[in-house]
Image (tube, rainbow, N blue to C red; front, side):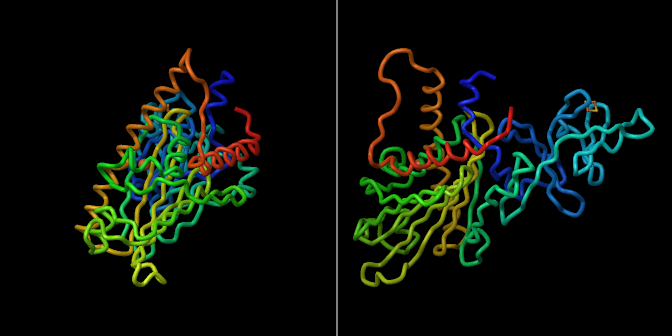
Length: 347
Ligand code: FES
Ligand SMILES: [Fe+2]
């Protein structure tokens, strides 16, 4: 691999990443490229999630194009079978299986998410566990989720959700949040970075107002916050306060933006959104439709950015000029560099 290609792989293997939503994994093989690795996911008869290398060691057929046989997966080409630990259990043309195997990867199912670890097993104990986001299963919140494949490096989306001054430009038509103009307060703690933005008696965008049962434009207080939790996960939210009773929030929403690189220029984007008000189905469906529209707007701009980067312009200004509103995104880049510096895996 060229040095450029190596540098473009700006994602640590020694990290838990989201492989899929739990309800995507069942008794049909699910094929997915994750961190430049073909992976097949399925459930055993007992319901445990299995993640194996999706490449038959016989003649490189994707195992995902085969069939499940009990807890094993059978390659669709010549019928070799592999168990949940990756070991070959059967070769139809041989009396007993040879000592061959595919890689099997540790997985953890947590609420609506299946996390996968594709890194060095010897270092697994030193790697932070998958972040817990208990609100995803908190009955006080209604949730909606979705997934998209985006033709952009995963860190572009991380930076997007860390600099919300793009809201009034990219999302004027969907979210209609026009007051996110000033750079937020930013706090870096270890390998996390958090922003916090306070709005005082600021007109509520229509989507927020309707969910709170208010007229669009009602001046209310709110706090927007978000944290880069790991290269895989960003958590954010908004607290809404009635200025006449500002001690306790009158409502809140929470989001997880979960990105898993497919390769250096493509990602899986899993998002989960929750709120503790206007939780009935029709209000939540409306919320999901606004989010879907907004995230498509992000996709559009991120793909354009990636396409420009891919062409490496020959003339003109070089590099990037950051401003104060980029503080959290720049901190995230430094954090990712630290994750990468801890990697000892040879390609
Ligand atoms: S390629 Fe899988 S059994 Fe031959
Ligand atoms: Fe956005």
